[in-house]
Image (cartoon, rainbow, N blue to C red):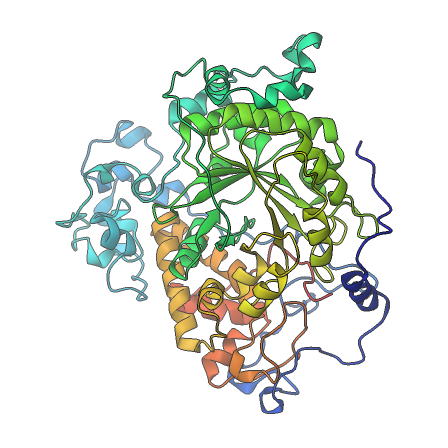
Length: 605
């Protein structure tokens, strides 16, 4: 186990600031300075009254979560969240019928309906957000046919599905295959599920004791590039190639974000100037089990020209084996090892932030990944386990001394695992970590992360000695997706409410292309839109502020009015109002529809 330091030599400024915020109550109900004319004493009338809670239930918090006492800490995830009711398969039309082909199961044995004419009589009215189905617009053919909620643009009155002149010939298969890259072949998925994939790396308990310690020998990490590649792919001969180099300097990098960092969101970020994107954190155990939902997190859109894959695991053999599959069947420009996730679910199994304290396993994991992949490797970590005892400044020089081939950068989030997202990110300590490296070995670029919410924040953070000039943005990107534009153009963008609505329309269009345009695809798009809105409401427009720019950690007033009704709606922190926004884009929800955000952590504490 890695020894935690007492860190007596830690710079004091950020620590003192956090200490004041932690140990004293603020005298004001809010900290963000908003112009008085935009502060309301109660819920604005333009939002309408809140619906009464069902009989026998208490009213929940404004975000939809259950109320708790002041002593209970608001953190983690909302469990047992409400789910959308799924349609019975017999109410859906067989895709073979939609495509005008013969069903391989026959009408009697098929679990889906073959009565296209009967379905057309009861088919729900189209959603009016788009004049033409987004999938039909991008591909010239919508695989959902009559079940598409925007289908009037590509089906006849009898339900016949029409192909456009610009139809993609491969659209006869799954429409997602045509939009996204990184689709795991079915035969490989079956091999993983049946534990028959021909891995080069054996599992730990299958190795001889004499070979188990091989990963810890420093000379293995500096093997010639061609020899490493040959060892890692003996079961699948591939062309030898040199390791690609990525320069993160002067780039805007959207950090991996669970749930909300999905493919449609990353397309929005690319549209607003992001240079580098990374997929959501994928669990190594689930990838090795061939789970479809986990491999879906690795999907990449062609617009993502520099794209990374982040994997979380607890053991060297796990990392080595999963990166073998990624190297052979996926497309990525770098592979990120997660040492920063603070979730109990991962840390209790030795993954995420807990792996920072397992020096031998971390070393074996990095060496195994280096042997398996030809793309650069990055590491995302926190300052340590406890805010008062950071040890990243001791761990980074250790990693540097291991001389891992292909290690391109280390990203340091300026908070500890126990802090999660509370208090300020300690950039003074990030600078200390960067300057702790030994001159005897190749210096690893250190990229800081935390609290970048404007171009002035970015310029202030990267001014710290030794920190790489990379704008790595996480929550700032969720709240202000146009943040890359602000950073590159060095301005505070007073974006209008109509421009923000256009961003959401683009997200919905991208979501329907990705998750599907049938009712299930609409439901999925709505859920992910609502998850995003649970962050977006925290943005306060520049024109409403007394002091510019807005600070990520400063709590705004409880009630505010905007310069128009739409702006007021966007600032509402009530989940019922987020549902209203989704109805503007995806039609009405059912009467019993409920939404509860996945994350309930307080970002202002």
